[in-house]
Image (cartoon, rainbow, N blue to C red; front, side, top):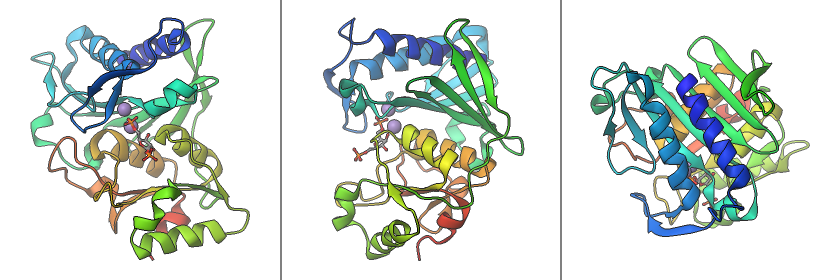
Length: 284
Ligand code: AHG
Ligand code: MN
Ligand code: MN
């Protein structure tokens, strides 16, 4: 976690000066998923790789920004999986972005379900740099980066996601091509008392609000993304562990996200994640 924390510090520092360094904007390249790569996507991926290469602990890394897993230390104990910069289309408008990561054992070639994750979490680069870490049976903890010391300080020892809540996050512009069950679920969520729609376009930012306030985030399959848009290994599964450790839940169709055995490193899943009682009502 010290190595991840060091990558997060570097990304946070670069984001603060990105506009000054003219680091914002697209690189003109697309990644393995066919998405536009922002300069800060590339910077963040390099920051994670360099930080994780220290100390010979990490055997392999799986990154959204790398076509295939990379081998690091020959005798490393861990596999690190990460989305170095999540929500990068927010960059040019100065809105929140994040990093998502998970720690597994050394055998990335034979990746198991999300239940194999030993630690998972995310950083949220907003007005403050926040870090959420969860591990199985040990709950989810919230830290904030103290810019005066560079240390992460504990803000909350044991986060609890409300069992239900008002926040609904989804790209509603795609609802016309969702399944009828997905549309009906969204309709029920929106008609719950006090419900409110909040969608930033950065999964980490939208999830973090739901973790604190309760509600549901969904990115189901649609015309443009038959299997949903979000990636199992470094988006859905890490947030599923955080959600479960805080008392929430995450589903892909009628399966628990944590139970899905990946078939490829960049596999996508239709994600529904959030408050326990809300997610229990999915798909119908
Ligand atoms: P990334 O920037 O890592 O590619 O992730 C973007 C993801 C996620 O953060 C967000 O929830 C979702 O894409 C937004 O997608 P739409 O623009 O289709 O709503
Ligand atoms: Mn992402
Ligand atoms: Mn990304």
